[in-house]
Image (cartoon, rainbow, N blue to C red; front, side, top):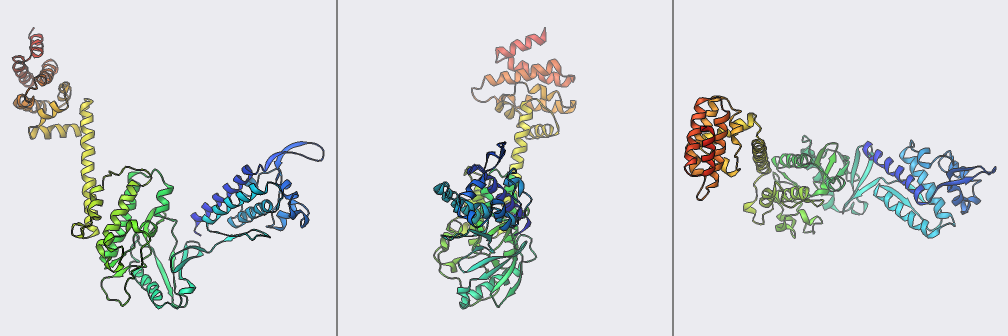
Length: 497
């Protein structure tokens, strides 16, 4: 188990110790021989009511003989053994479970809770031996995962072995598949987003590989609030790994959440058991076996693995991107929805031809999104009468394409004069000239009230601008509006007094 896995196991077993105490009321009021009342562990009561009391002097003797533990009833089990190794914590749990199994107190409750703890330990790669009679035994399980024809075995910290199950040693086809998978992954060793493999052993049909922290399915379930940048990092790593594989003529054909591992901050692709090197011919063909991870498999090849090709990998990538953004109750309509739809089209001719095309599309979507976000931010500043470089460039671009008047009407910017006032004199003149040229058309058919917007802007400039040319242009606009709107006429009379 790697370091992170050991820490996780240690935390889990520490929580289990605490859980046991709470559930069984192992911490409570006690009275010593002198009738002094104190709080302490009451697990000894369960022990005294068990058959274990016949084989050991007392609970201290039981813990000493089963793990060489010092047992102090005035300290919680969690505090006593918080610095113990993962193996020693297993022994503590083993002792607790055996007391609860063999006591005559609360038999039904004890049995139920023992089963709960066992289920938790099984998820933490702990092997449990629980015979009908006798001791419960807990030990690290070296087989930490398995597939249809192979086991994943722990070798040491950070290193695993994928080995053909003994019952398939005589299956020539599966032996070839193991060797072929190793060869294909070895060709991709230079890529940091493909799992590293080392040393194929023909004697037991196995190879060594680095150990991941967890697969992508578990990571997405563990991290309920991943940021957009977190999700983008996952997708980027997968696309980088698949680009490298395809550029080396290797297609995966079995890409799903379980075959993507988190190692540190990176996400790497593993399990090329169904991979195919397109650059060579092999006698070993894919079988027609039904695929388990049907959500990510190309529906055009779900009944025949021989139909899985490069564009089937494209389909799987699209489904993974969609899952990353829609799992855990997220909305269906995400930023890459169009990319997903094209990647997973039932018409293969409409799918992307390469992973590089998906990368380019993602970059384009992100660029457009950045521009939209920038535009939205700039408009918000204008609505709040704020001026900066972004606002300056945005407004002058509108002036350049004769869209400033339309923009003013769309956002009903009757206070736009306050923005104009913050520009330098030469720019104020250009903006006011553009308004004078296009304001009448921008009011729109029947939009008489829009004249009041431009009247307000002109009035403000007449009262506040320091540039004579700007004031002249603004007054001309106000005079023209006054011929149409009483509101403008009143404003004109005010500045004329």
